Amino acid sequence: MYPVGITIRIILLIAPRLLFSIFVTKTYEEINEKIRAKKAVVYTAEEVIDLVRKKGAEKAAEEVDVVTTGTFGAMCSSGAFLNFGHASPPIRMTDIRLNGVEAYGGLAAVDTYIGATALVDPPGKDYGGAHVIEDLVAGKDVHLHAWGPGTDCYVRKDIDTTINLDDINEAYLYNPRNCYQNYSIATNGSDRTIYTYMGKLLPRMKNATYSSAGQLSPLLNDPHCDTIGMGTRIFLAGGEGYVTWQGTQFKTTPEEVNGVPVSGARTLALIGDMKQMDAKYLRGLSITGYGISLAIGVGIPIPILNKDIMQRCAISDEEIYAELNDYSVHANRKALARYNYAQLRSGSIEYEGKKIRTSSMSSMEGARKVAAELKDWIVKGEFELNKPCLSLPKEASLKPLIEWKE
Image 1: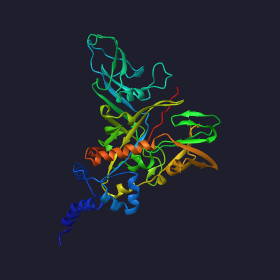
Image 2 (image 1 turned 90 degrees about the vertical axis):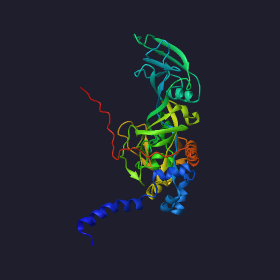
Image 3 (image 1 turned 135 degrees about the horizontal axis):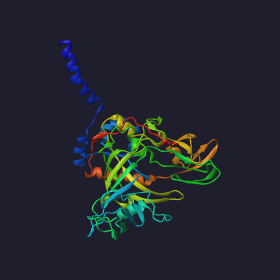
Image 4 (image 1 turned 180 degrees about the horizontal axis):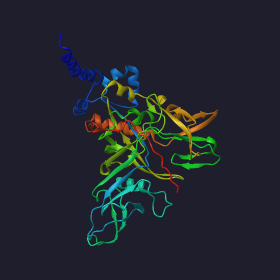
């Protein structure tokens, strides 16, 4: 028999290893070794549902190395940093237009940020910052007109020229809020048609719109961000990107059903090189009566480290619920009902005996293409996984904007 003190120390040394062997089936490096050897087993989040139902999460976790997710929809909180390079003589650009769209002039001399929702000047055309970004990624020429105050080191006051993605130095998306984790279902209980970022909503609840890839959506397959964090390598608009931080409006407080929130919760801030991207995964949008937005295809690989992660990746549309909201109500809006994504994708739902036609603001076909292409990259050994260098917050809530009055 060991003395009590020694026994306790042995237990403390052994226990973590026992827990590791019980709960962890793979490591990032083991998975990456299989990817490099082109032996990784990869499923999309849709494909894996039937596998887990058939074999159970534990057996499926032994078989599967990576699950790929995807989404392709409007992500208004997006934009791009651009560096034009210096002209001769040089100019410090403080007022910048790209194809007539205002870009930010408050950075260094020839750096700018163009937001996806920026409007053409003068407004009125169905064109904005999102379309400038799409045009650049598509290889099109873009008209640059910029002005500056003129200084001893930047003597020029005006430049009018044409640029394209090959000509400029850096061009990268930096998106403060993408990949919303679930979202509300929008309807309109008023007597008039209203136009919103959720599309055209007909009066008296004649239609309802939603926006999520459901069972394919990245943050619904990793609902508590156990594998998604700062530094996670992702598919971003057809190129390689990274998670840089939690997205704006990130919150963990919404109620959960079946382990996922029933309303908008976590979000991601993303970055990626525009010179790698494909315009088919990045499209400028003009939403009638609302304005400009940018549709982006985002895919995130989830490493199957254990059976719990595997089980969460097997969530289906029948298990994911969203809340119906009346978008004609602008203050103290309350959820009217809940529906799962299988019901929403059926084409109609019922509320208090009334049949409401449903449609999606995001593309399920596009989400499937994203998840499939990311899967193909991994299977071919072209895309390895990054272990996050920092976890995203486990607790976060939102503050409202308080309007102070004197």
